[in-house]
Length: 79
Image (cartoon, rainbow, N blue to C red; front, top):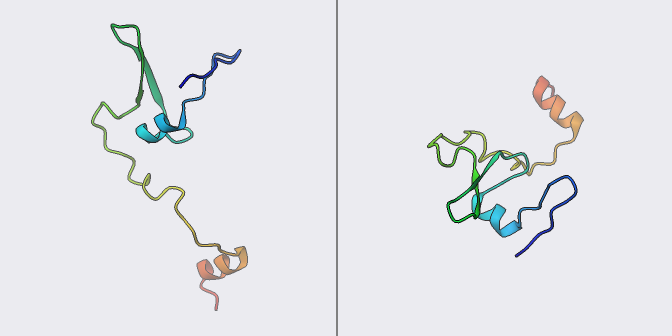
């Protein structure tokens, strides 16, 4: 799969690559060139053994559709 370099030097990472690396918007990545001249992309933290963010699994998962007034009543303890 190929992509086109923009005038700003940007490219779109294909979806199957983003999925394979679990890349989400705002996720830091690192680029390198190996000895054969190939560009290699790594998810930052993937090679360092860093623990994943403890909130990452829950981020963006809420499926409850709260109305503002209902949520505020719940938070305030109103009946």
